[in-house]
Image (cartoon, rainbow, N blue to C red; front, side):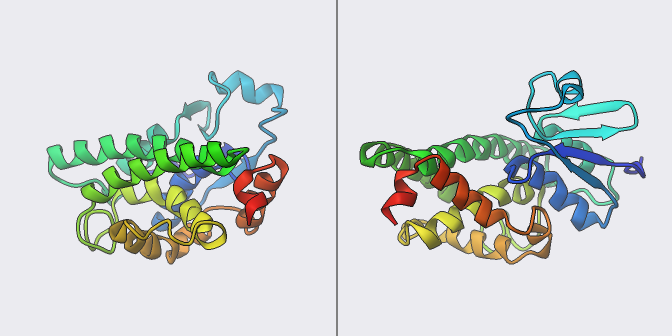
Length: 221
C-alpha cells in the first residue's frame, strides 16, 4: 500500500500536533496540502468532519482521520519506510512514550500560560517532573533511540521545539538536569523537516500568544 496522491491536513498555524505528520510527509518527500483555519471560530464544514472539534484532521478523498498519532501511524504504515522499531515490545514502548509526550505538551503549555509566580512554579515543577521521566527513557544520542529517526522523534519534535524556545527566552537553566533531552532537542531542532513543518513565523506567533494571554513567564522576561 502506498500513500495516496492527494493528502490534505487541516489545522491552525501554530498547532504542534499537525507538525508531527507534516515532518513525516516532508521526510518521505510527499506532496501534501495544509489548510489553516481559525479554531476559535471554525467553519461549519470543519465541525462536520471533526467529531471532537480538534485539529489536525487528515482528508483523503471522502475519508477523514482525526487525532494526531492516528494520522502519524497511518502515514507511517503506508510509506515505503517503517519508522517504528522492528521489535514489537520496543515499538509498544515507543507508542506509550508518545502518549506521555502529548501529556508533556499540555504541561509545557500550562507553564507558558501561567498567570502568576505561584502558577509558574506549580506548572514548571510539574513539567520538570515529566522531564525526569523522559530523560531516564532516552537511549544514546542524537535521537530518542540512537542514530536513526523513529516515529517517536516526529511525535516529540514540536514539544522539544517549544521547550527550546522557553529555554532561550525565559528559562536558561531548563535543560541543566536533562543532558539527554538537551542533546535530543539540539539534534531535532537542526532537522530541515522540522523547520519546514510549520509556518515561518511560528516562534513569533508563540511569543505573541504568550503576551496576549498575559503570561507571567513572558511578562517576567
